[in-house]
Image (cartoon, rainbow, N blue to C red; front, side):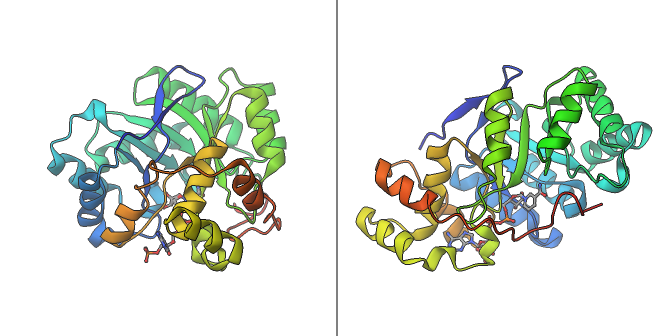
Length: 275
Ligand code: NDP
């Protein structure tokens, strides 16, 4: 099974499908990430605030997979925004991960009330120059936050990782991303299980037509939209299910029918209010 690789605006590749570890218990992380690596995932999305970077690092070390075959993302949390604190935070994350660099380092939230995301971004530019991160990007940035970065700094983010699922498609942010070659990473691709996405009759019907599960149909919709996704699961069975996406394709009208499910409803925090 070959996961497609997308090329970021800095020329580096990223596997379009990965494994996310938000809310994966730190005590269980090594085992669960080891399961994901065994299934075939090579892209892991974590964050300092998840508290499980050590477990991710242990799973990577135990896997014996060559470093250049893995893609690891972590994120700078709001409390660490600023110049010196960002430098300290990447050092801490790399120590916990047991790595000398991550493939992608993100500002986790714009945290506008702190007004530090421009300074933090300039620090990430230096972190990239030092080789501690191959690519740099942002997360939960809305169009005004992105515009400000483009106006006041030198490097265009390689990605913007945003809440995105059929109920909440963030068309304005994704269009801006297309215009400026900022790849869209969709967090909560399955809506975090917080609304009955996988039970919607349209999704269930399309799944039945392909002999796939509703989750596979929703993840396939993301891939065909060009999003980068890293669904999370604690269950080995679902980890395998979420990786098994490359033997079917949604027809244009099926893809369009899922797109019409938009309700502009977040399941997570509002980026203007998370600080
Ligand atoms: P997801 O949309 O991936 O949903 C995860 C939920 O769906 C879990 O409850 C899981 O349950 C369930 N699930 C997973 N697979 C299936 C399946 N095949 N069938 C039915 N249910 C399933 O939400 P996440 O929030 O985890 O998003 C993915 C990743 O995005 C995160 O892990 C993290 O890496 C990133 N993220 C980033 C954020 C940011 O601010 N930048 C915010 C939130 C997430 P179970 O575990 O029991 O299988």
